[in-house]
Amino acid sequence: MNLSTDICYQALLARDARYDGRFFTCVTSTGIYCRPICPAQTPMLANCRFVASAAAAQEAGFRPCLRCRPESAPESPAWAGTSATVKRALRLIDEGALDEVGLEALCDRLGVGSRQLRRLFQRHLGASPLAVAQTRRLLLAKQLLHETELPLADVALASGFGSVRRFNEVFLHLYGRAPGTLRGRRAEHSQAAALTLRLPYRPPYDWQAMLAFLARRIIPGLECIDEERYQRVFRVGETIGSVSVTHAPGDNALQASIRLPELSALPNVIARLRRLFDLQADPEAIRRGLGRDPALAPLVESRPGLRVPGGWDPFEVAVRAILGQQVSVDAATGLAGRLVERLGENMMDQAETGLNRLFPSPDRFTFDEIKALGMPSARATALVRLAATYREQPQLFDRRQDLDETVAHLCALPGIGEWTAHYIAMRGLQESDAFLPSDVALQRVLAEQGQRPTPRELLARAEAWRPWRAYAVIHLWHADGATTRVNSQQERGDATLV
Image 1 (spheres, rainbow, N blue to C red):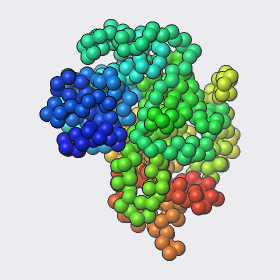
Image 2 (spheres, one colour):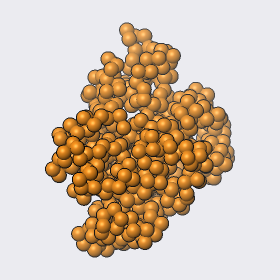
Image 3 (tube, one colour):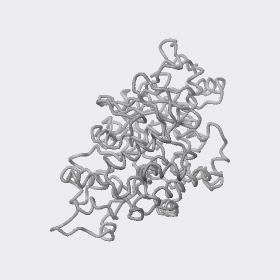
Image 4 (spheres, rainbow, N blue to C red):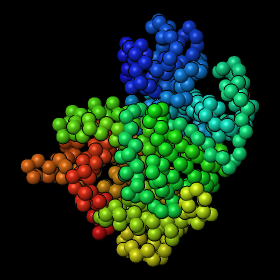
């Protein structure tokens, strides 16, 4: 943790919401850990220990506060102060990687030894990988107990516990009480009912800008935006479900209503929603990082809540990135819609939304099917090769050791150049430092006296924006769209498939 004890204690005294989720206070006199905004009486400094994560607090023997509910805190940015290996491991753990397989299997996927991974986690998070996974399960279970009407057995399954017995043991150990005592009444639940959960963020959050970005890329049948609500259907593994997301600004959270026949998929769905809506962003850190540039400073000050819109699935983002090369957003969205209509699995219409198409799985991509959509042979080949590689390498879109390695790995695929690779990294992999120096809109907004910067000049200038270059892209795109509506319709992809 990069925050000093003095800064943490001053934030605690002020109950400063800007630090919510960035650290937790372990109170030695009570054995409880709290958020900086906890309404309880502020403990004396001598009784406080400050840690970077809830997992570190729990591994040190502290239990979550029942008043400020640490599970309701916005998550710390996954990239903040951590190594590339820890970033990748955190993403996999968030998706439930340690719920079904052991630590050794996770380490094999990451290409590191278990000893090294434990050492990295201890250095950056103050807790072991297993403690992080256990804390994630516990806090999700606690959230489900507070916010849903799921029976206790379903809470255990949905939060990743292997058994109800283990679920009860963990709660008894941490709280000295059974899980059921944390909810006010025994609730009934039907599998057909939607789970409604809060997904917190650090304010401000520009919900209208997020909806506007997604609305221009909506694929009919797969997703829709109805007034202030985003909806889509999805497949996670073998589980098919749907989700509806609205904004709850008074709670500094999004509200997601999720329908799932298999509750074990819930952690994966929550992780995808957090990436799709960029809920781990730290607006204050981004403001400080980009505000030093005289051209970016007024943009960030005027729209401090802009986020990088993510994607539901990296494969979906990659397909849509290839479709969008050198064509308008509207044209690319039209192509994606035809692709989904032709190749996507047809589901029974849902009475409420009418969404009835899943995004096509990789095995549906054949050259003849893609060509039938009227696409050029080179683009059809790129899509088919991408799908074939993904089938053969399910870990194709795993983050590599650093951004350059990730981009180089993607660029090795036919039809993907640096622009497309960075676009996939930015939206599909939530790489906060992805950047598009050849993008025409960026060059246009940053032109001086009619002279646009070259990609090399733009790269040099953007060195000062690290690790927030992806947010600079979004701010510059927004500025370009506000002044040049026609040109802003372009998804400026690689020229290799023109």
